[in-house]
Image (cartoon, rainbow, N blue to C red; front, side, top):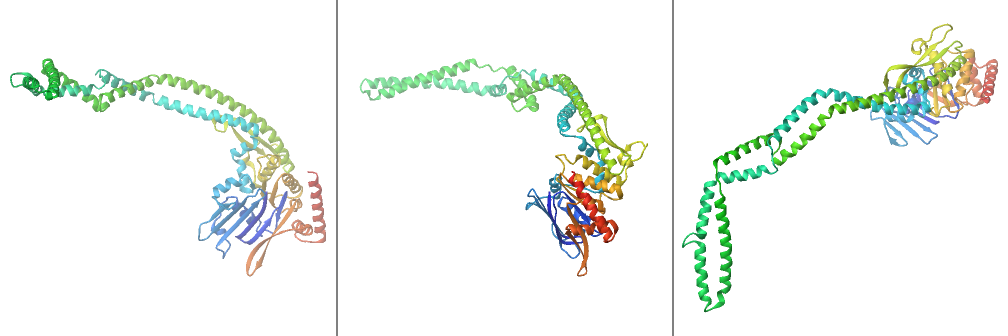
Length: 539
């Protein structure tokens, strides 16, 4: 509930703080006094756009602040020269965020707001109760899955030709690598053998020379070593101090003979066939070409081959994946359509009940022959809202066919229809704590004005209502009566707001009813207030 509204330098308002109460808060005053300005100022703290043209002449900035009974404080400042600001409980925010915060706090109804009733999403907001909302949530879950799966299926089908081309290419790659019959580390082993065969002459020469140096003639190492050993053996007969050296030489001879045997065997096993070298070069060329395409080594190429085979396996199951996806889409589509059908029936039942209640209320508000119907029809395509469309049909006259509300209703009729809807739905938990009716009584009078006044009073029983009115019938229903007036002060026009006491209320309603305050108009005003009090006592 809105507790206070402070307005500074907003159009004609210089500095005003208005205190609102529970129930019906009526705002009255002469035309041009500033009633709508006050509502515009409230709109500023609700997130509506405010231009610098709204800043009072001679002031550098405007300020609007509102406090609510839930502890929320909102302040909006608009400056001619510096950046404007919006704060909620002292913390900065944006007008867009502010609008979201206040949507559940204050519901403003004026001519432009009433037009929002014509939008389909707002029609659904009327008929979708808690049970329907639960069903809608379940539908949206299915619809989201259906949309995702359908998109995936479409992409799969579109990719089918590409997949066939890809499969052919993968199979060609697999064949190219497989036909080479590669072995792990083959390239390293091949390089080593080619290096060996390419230097065959040098290898043979060095092996032969090495064998000769070790054991071939009187000057070879082993023969010389044998002579040294013999001489040390002769020395040992006279002195054993060189026995350890002789022992080392014996060990050395053993190692050298093993080395000689290995060199000799290596030399005997050498096969330097030119044909073998050609074969190796041809094999290296095959591997080199594969490396250019598939990896820097044979091991990398083999890993790539495994990956290609895995891709082939996946590509070969493409059609079965499409079939499986098609079955999933068909199943989801059946479930989603079934859920949409249930949603359609629930909405039709809700719309029928709500239409009857609203039609009754509209007729009470002076349109005796009005026909009002919320029509729910099956749609050709599913959407995130379900499988139906919603429209309000209306006729104000006897014997006339009902047409879309947007085509047949006038501004005044739309205001009363909006009030009828609010009267019927006022008890909903999702209704805003504060409702604002901006001159909803335009073009009304007499008995209809009284009926409208009673409807607004009903709406105000469960929540706070702010209502600008020119009708004494509505003003007489006030729980709090605020008078908006303007006067001249120091050569400037200033708008002021005053909370009227009982006697002041009688005078204001007398003025509204007859244009003047006289004994007769005062008596009439007093009777209107008493009648309103008696009516409110029955609510």
